[in-house]
Amino acid sequence: MIDHSFHTTRWSLVSQLRASGDELSYRVALGELCQRSWFPIYAYVRRAGMSAADAEDATQGFFEYLLTHELMAEARRERGRFRSFLLGCLKHFLGNEWQKRQAKRRGGHLAAVHLDALEAEERYRVEVEALSTSDEEVFDQSWAHGMLDRAMQQLRAEQRDEARFDLLAPALTGTEDRVALRLATGMTESALKVTIHRLRKRFRELLRAAVAETVESEAEVDAELTYMVACLRR
Image (cartoon, rainbow, N blue to C red):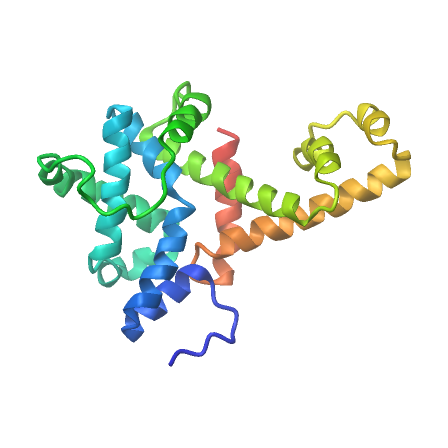
C-alpha cells in the first residue's frame, strides 16, 4: 500500500500507482489528467489537417490508446512533465497507431474521455485557427490556456457572489478598468484594491496547484509556469 500522506503531485501519483500494480487506481488517476487535457490534443490533430470528425475520433482513440497501453514503462526520464509526455505519446500514436484504427468503424472505440464536439470546434475556431505558430506551439498554448481556465473556474466556484466575480475577473490579467469596476460594483477605491489583490493572490495559488498536478515534483513547478507564460506571449 502506497502512503499518499506526503505532498504528491497527480502526475507523480500516476507513476507510483503504475509501479505498485494498482491498475484500477492508476487508470482513474491517469483518466482524470486526460479529462483535463483533451483540448490541446484535439487542437493539435485538427491543426495537423484532420477534419473535425476525424479529429474527434483521433482524440478519443488516442486516450483509449494511452489508457490501455504500457506507456508508463516507456516514459522514463521524459515523464517529468505530463504535457511533454502526452505530446510524445500523441506523436507516436499518430505515426504508428492511427492509420491502423482508421479502418475500424467510427464509434467502435472506448469513450475514454468526454469530448463535446461542438465545444471543441468552437474553441478551435476562436483560440487556434488564426494562430501562425507551429503545431507543437499550438499544443503548448492550448495547454497553457487550459491551466488558466481551470484555475479561473476554481476561483469562481469559491466566490459567494459569482456575478461580482465575473465583473472583477479581467483584473486577474491586468486588463481591468478600475473606474468602471467601482461604478459597477459600488465598491470604494480602497476596497476594490484590496479585493483585486486577494483575488490575484488566490488565482496564483490555484494556478500553481493546477500546474503542480502535471509535473513530477514541486521543484519543476516554477519552470513550467515560466514556460506557460512564454507560450501565452508568443
